Amino acid sequence: MPAGCHVLWRKAPHKTLTALVHDSLAHIPAGTGVRVFFRADDIGVPSRSFSRLLAIFSRQQAPLALAVVPAWLTRPRWRFLLRASTGNRRHWCWHQHGWRHVNHEKRGKKQEFGPARTPAMLEADLLRGRKRLQALMGGRFTPIFTPPWNRCSREALALLKAHGYLAVSRDAGARASGPLEPPDIAVNVDLHTRCENNAQDAARGLAAELRYAFACGTCGIMIHHRRMNAAACEFLALLIETLAAHPRVHLVDMRDLAGRSRSP
Image (cartoon, rainbow, N blue to C red; front, side, top):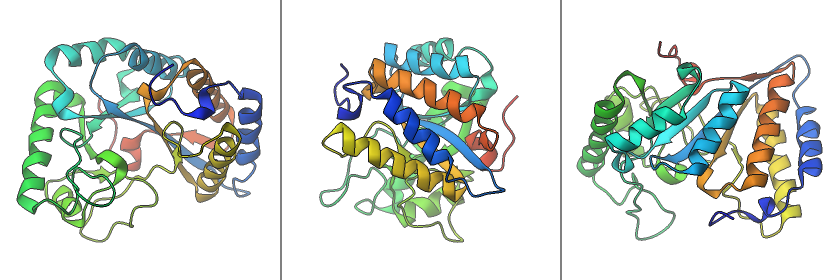
């Protein structure tokens, strides 16, 4: 079982969870639809779990945003990731996940691009990461920024805007973007880094997040492949299949939400 695998996935409560998903879909407001995107974090190191994740999305022909940690990526690793990303390359949104995924805050919640650092430090790491990904990925890189731990400072947001990033993707609980900040394509459903202590509470919490996200009209689902066991993989495949089959659910690419057409 993967290290850090949540209690929700130590057994396979698929019947219960599938029923909760269908119940959550009933909360889509009448006469409307919901846009759903998936974002996988902590990308950069080849592994079976990564290949398994991409195989799920390839089979479903569903788009996936991949948040890549620049310092983790090397040319051989990038070749492995490309080999794993079979199928239509338009399905994969490769974008930036911080620089090294290192916490710099001595107090409070973890942040790599947080208030403990000067704007010059933030800018140096931001551009260092972008330069590395552009050099390795070429045209496959999309200038969208997912901060590690889903949070960053106002100064970091201003730098993203100044350097032409299309969007930032944080947690829905983060403060709303202002006029000097890029659009925020927030995630509001967490599959694998939950805080509940038992599977029953976790299932209820997941259902509540789905209901809220569906009612909002945009549902962003966060994935951590290194925490996924077989049960989590099976449920993810069922979830994508269920959502794709629903007439009022639209699986979308993060780049479309950022207002940019997909790369050719």
